[in-house]
Image (cartoon, rainbow, N blue to C red):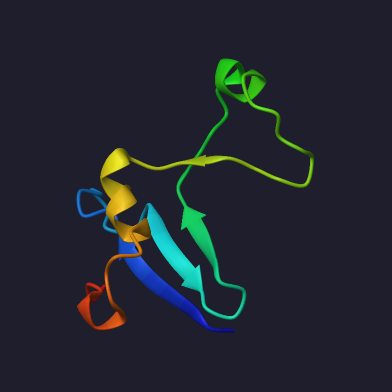
Length: 76
């Protein structure tokens, strides 16, 4: 499995979550975040039974930006 950690929340009090990963074989992102269990939020989304929703802070979007080259990616 070619899973690469792209970055974790620099403001996380415990330093372990949320985290963004890249699956290099599938070319997909994996996101570790806070479980969404707010009924109003879940009702506003059409989520199939085989999917789930996690929440991450806006500041984490930097790890999705494709403009960074592999050699510029932050060490985490």
